[in-house]
Length: 90
Image 1 (spheres, helix red, strand yellow):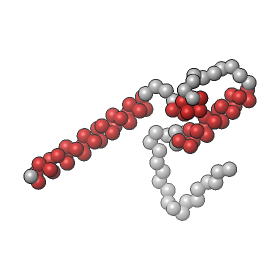
Image 2 (cartoon, rainbow, N blue to C red):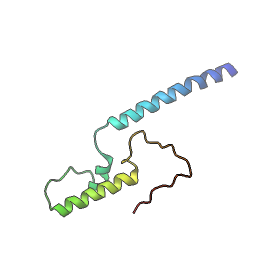
Image 3 (tube, helix red, strand yellow):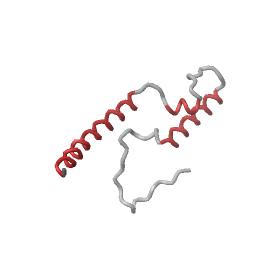
Image 4 (cartoon, helix red, strand yellow):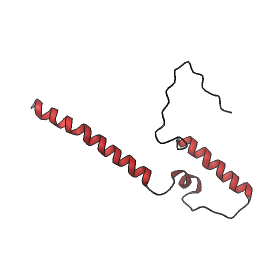
């Protein structure tokens, strides 16, 4: 019985990794921009309008992307010590 459980666990680990990589790849390859869907309500890009409206829309897009963490690289990680000061944002 122990061998059976161990065998199932050893099969589960690579299967889980492969399924995770496939799901991640599909989410990155899928068409569409989630930030654009949130900020514009699913509508397409509108090329008409005043410059101030376009700038406000771009600012909303950037803020939403930053809030969701989509402005970071796909494989974002950092290696720094706790003593390294973080830059303050204004």
